Length: 95
Image 1 (cartoon, rainbow, N blue to C red):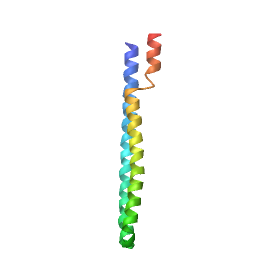
Image 2: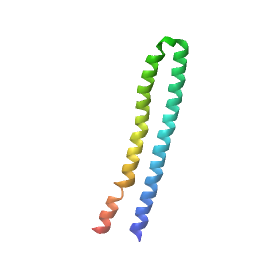
Image 3: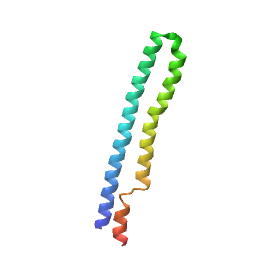
Image 4: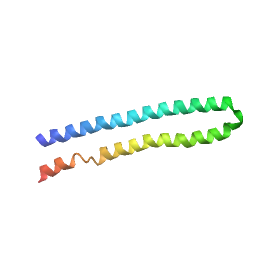
């Protein structure tokens, strides 16, 4: 019973960490998109002839900003489905 309690505690802390990882990643992405969109509008208002070029660059940077969140989600799924912290506990139990 001790092992089950330890595994459940490890899984609970892992889920808490994943929640923070994905939540803060999404918050950072939202802030990044807000700044990026504001700067695009500001740049287009100052020099309308560069709007097409600025929009292309904005979408490129938007992809990079989204990439950070996608990496966080990938790490979260890895820790949920293949938690490396549970393996040593299982190894101890099964000898």
